[in-house]
Amino acid sequence: MSTSNVVCSTECVDVTWSSGRTTSLPNLWLRDNCACDDCRITQTEEKKFILTQVPADIAPSGASCESDVLAIEWPDGHRTIYTADFIHSISTPRRPCVRHWTGDFQPLQVDYAAFTGDGAVAVEAISEFLETGVVVLTGAPTEPETLEALAEHLGPIRELLFERIHNVELDPNGYNVAHTSLPLPPHNDFASYSWPPSVQALHFLANETPGGDSIVVDGWRVLEELRRDKPEMFSALCSMPVPFREFDDTNETYAVAPIIELNADGSIARFRFSNQLMQTMNPTQPGVTDFYRAYHELCQRITDDAAKSRFRMEGGSILLVASHRVLHARDEFEPIGRRHLQDAYFEHDNVRNHLTVLQRKAANR
Ligand SMILES: [Fe+2]
Ligand SMILES: [Zn+2]
Image 1 (cartoon, helix red, strand yellow):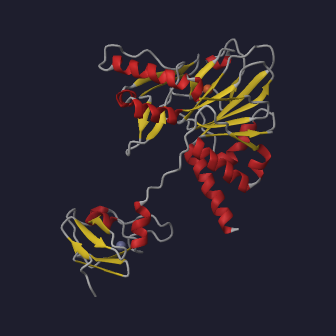
Image 2 (tube, protein in one colour):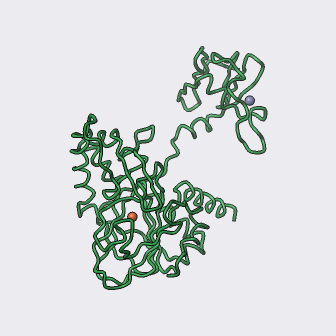
Image 3 (cartoon, protein in one colour):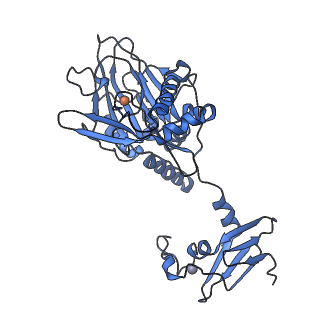
C-alpha cells in the first residue's frame, strides 16, 4: 500500500487522485462530513455527529488513498471514507441556470390545463420559469380564486396583509396606485416586507379596456449591466438602506433594506424596486448624494423601452414572475371596460421543490 499520494498536516489532508488533480481537505471538514452509520441518522441521512465531539485541532492519525478511495484514521479509532467522485461532485456549485433577456423577449405561453394536468409540460414550464423568471399560463378559468388551485403546482400561497388573494381593479378607495387607471412603472410587490414574496401570479379575470398592456423587465439583467458599466453605482445600491411602506386604514407594512441584496458569492439575491412604496430617506446620512445618482441611473435603465417586454394579457391568462428578479408594470388604460385581476404570491423555494418532485416522479416511471 502506498501513501505517497496523501500528505497529512495539522490543518489538512492533501490528496492526489488518479486523475493527477490534488485536493486540499481541511481536517475539521473531513471529520464533520463523515458519512458512516455512526455519524449519520441512517433513516434520514441527516448529520448526527456534532463537532463538539472532537477537539478543534484534530488531525488524522493515518490516511491512505487506494483506487481513488481516501481512508482517514482518527486518533480515537474512528474511520472515515471519501471517494474522488464525491469530492469532485461537491466541488461543482449547485446553482440554477439564469438566462438574461431584454425587451425583444416574449415569455413562454403554456396552456393552463396542460400545465396543471401533464407533468412533462409542468417540468418544461417550471424549468423555463427558473431560467427566465417569467411564464404566462393561458386559457385558465376566469373564476375568482382560481389561483388557489395553483398551490398544488407552485407550493402553498404566501399570505400577506390586505388580502389572501389580492383584487386589483378600479377602486376609488384603493390603497395602491394599481387601483387607478394610471400607468404603473416597473416594480415588485411588497418591498415593504423584509422578505418580499419571491413569486407572484397575476390572474386576469377580465381585460376589456383599451390600453393597459402588461410589461415585464429582467431586473437582474439590468443590474448586471449596471455592475459592469458603473460598479460604484452598483455598490451604492447594495449598501444604502431604503425605507418602504404600504398601508391602509387597518394595515401597516414597513421595511428598510438596500435595493440590491447579494449572495455570499457576490451574485444577486434580491432586487427590491417600488417607486410607489419607497419612503423619504433621511437626507443627512452619509452617502445619500451618491445613492441618488445611482438610483437615477437605475430608474432610467429599468424604464428604458429597450428593457421592457410588452404583451397583452387577456381574461383567463396568468402571468407568473420570479419577483425578486423580474419587475412587472402596465401601461395606462382607458377606464371604460371591465379590468379585474387577482394577485397571489408563492415562494421560489417551493416552486423549485415542485420541479424536483416532478422530475423524480418522471425518473421512477
Ligand atoms: Fe404590482
Ligand atoms: Zn463517521
